[in-house]
Every structure is written in C-alpha cells, then in structure tokens.
Image (cartoon, rainbow over all chains, first blue to last red):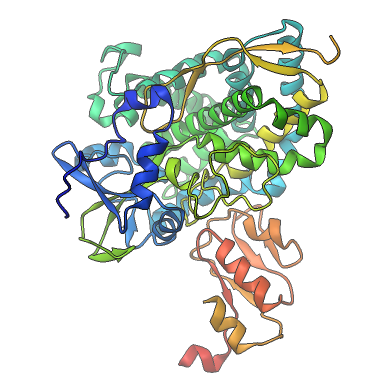
Length: 417
Length: 81
C-alpha cells in the first residue's frame, strides 16, 4: 500500500451523499493507476472505480465472492450472515437454486405481460398528479408506482402498499450512519445485527412475509408468494430463512431502486429541459432515454465482493480475504467509456451503464421489470406534454448505498398554458 | 474467448449451447436472439434452440450472458483435448 501525502479518499460517509455523488473524488480515484486502498472502520477495502474493472470483478464470481463476509462494506459474524443471507449473498449452486425459483417471472418475455398493469397504475397516478399541477413527485408518483407493480406481481394485497413503502423508507435509513428507529420498533425483539440493513423494519417485513405465506398455505393463490411457500414446504428448495430473505429482497429491491431511478430521471428532465423537449419531439428517443435515466440515477451506489484467493486486478495485488468494492456511482461516469459523462444526454447510442451491475451472475433480477416501468412512466408523462420545473432543491437520503431521493417538488405545466 | 471462436471458424456458423448447471434464467439470450434461445417457463432454464450464429454474434452472446452459461458446442475431439 502506497503511503500518500494527501488525505485518503472518503466515499463512505453517508452524509456525503446529501449533496449527491462525490464525482470529483471518484474521478481522482479513477485517474489513479491500479486500485485505490480506501480506509474503512480500522481496516479498508480496494475501491474499484473504473468501468472495465467493475465488469472484471462482476464476471468473476469464483474469485470475487458474494457469499463470504458480506456484500456491504462491513463484515458480518457467521450467524448474522446466515440469518440475513439472500440471493445477493450466495454463490454457485445455492445462488442458481434460489434464482431459478423466481427468475422465470422476470424474463423479458414474461415481464411484457405486466406492461398493461403498469400502464394502468401509471395513468391513474399521473392523472391525479397532473391535475394537482405537480407537488412531491416521490410521494405521488415515484414511490407508489413501483411498489404497486411489484406487489401485483408477487400477489401481495395492494392495500398494504403504503405500509410497505414506509418499511422501505426505514430500510433506506438503515443504510445511513444514523438510524432513527428504536431497536424495538414494530415489536422487534431480534438483535439488529441479525436483520438486513440492521433495521427493525426488516423484522416487520419478515413478519409480514411470514403472515402472508401462512395465509397462502391455507388458501393457495396463483401468485409468487404461493409458489415460494410451496417450494419451502416441498422440502429442499427453500428454507424458512431463505423464504423470509427472498420475500424481503423482492419487496424492497423491487420498489426502492426503481423509485430512485424514476425520481432522478424526473429531476434530470426538470434540470435539463432541452432533453425533455427532445423526448417530447421524438418518442423514438424513449429507449435510449430509459438507459440514460438508469445511468444518471445509479440507484445502487456500490456492491462489495471478497477475494477468495490471492489475485490481481488493474495491476494491483489483492490478497485472499480482502474486501473489493465496486462503485457503480463511479463506473457510470467513467470518461473512458462515456463521452461527456457529466452530461445528461438521452440520445446516447452506446450506453453500457452498470446500474444493473457489471454483468456476472448477480446481475439485477429486476432488470427488465425496471426498464419497462421507467419506459412506461416517461412515455405516459411525455404523452401529457407537460413541462417540468423544480420548485426547490430536492432532499436526498443520507446513504452511501442507495442513491435515494426523499422528496422532489415539481411544478407541472400543461403545454400551451 | 471471442478471438478463439473467430479463429476456429472464420466466416462460419457457431452453434451455441447453454450450461444447464450454471444458467440463472435471466433471459438475456432469448431477448437478443429469440430464434436461438428459449427460457423454459417451468424450470427457468435457457436452452439453445437454433442452428447457430456468426462468430461475431456468438462472441456478443457469450459476453452478454450474465452467468457465463453460453459457450460454443464442442466437437468430441475438442472435448477430449
């Protein structure tokens, strides 16, 4: 490790992200040859900040494991890792087994079947939002849309959407350096280290999933929850802990990340009205616009792997057991891959963003669902011909993990008015 | 990997196979080449259903598969090497 005269980089303080992604720090790290050693809680990790290096780590799951240590920055004790283990923290045969339980639901062909439902939900939300002339885009559009879609797909009652958004908001807080919920919130009695995001809200989501599973056991439906419960009851395909964590993942990741993407997209279109006008004028730009919204939003800022063996990346020697952290928040703005990366340009022809990961077996399960939702939302918003204006500065989440936006106050003006 | 395919079959057709142990059923292959791949809706596993593609396209498809499950069909001689 080279001893540097300058201050070490810090991209892990959650409050840093209240002002957005620290692009200058990441640019300096990308420009540094090899990998940068980033101090963290008495230890540290190798910061992988370039697009090509993120891809190399993502695609080599044998050397860069998700199942060892943790996929977040801090290590978990063995019992905590087991209690919290989901698709995200498994490799190899276990990962394939868990993934195949739900993968068929999320293939491009099967996701297309949910487009009509998504469009109906979108139109209902947008009609109300446009009628009121705007307001908090997160509250009125970006939060309710993806939660209602994922609950529809899973077979979770839609009347619980608001409760599950509240839980999701607390889970985001769990990724902050400050956790406002008391340990016993939602009747939690489990040690926080055993719960995803160290949050008592995870207890609430586990409990919700278990109650719903029990109901489906008695009264099976044609839905995903029933399918998972039958897999659990069938024996060796899904343990009770795996069911809890898979349900948690599907609900949380299935709504929070898309919410973030849609919100950053709306914010970008309000900030750069020329790009919004391009989309209004030419709907053929919808597809590249969706990809640019995904790049620009980078809903998940990083994921961690742990080296299983001594290896080398970008000329840097990595020892077995070292933490290796892929910063999508940097790779998506890598000047080696994207022309003018700090420009929001909906006409990019090649947009190899890594918002669904850098490839490899952990590529986001909801990739095609998220694309479809973002596409439908901006298509329907464009069909209304409105202009978007920021009423004031958006408030962002204090988190080094999710690129969350808590509120986005917009003015909507109908064309010609 | 891509260069080796092109070297072996310049201008030819590469037949592709899906490793059934490794496939995570993402559906990327079926999206890119619906004539060449099908994800089974019961098992969630993809299989190759087509006659093959150009070496250039094969390299793209191999790279696009997230789980690394796609590869060229190997002849018996290649398998014993």
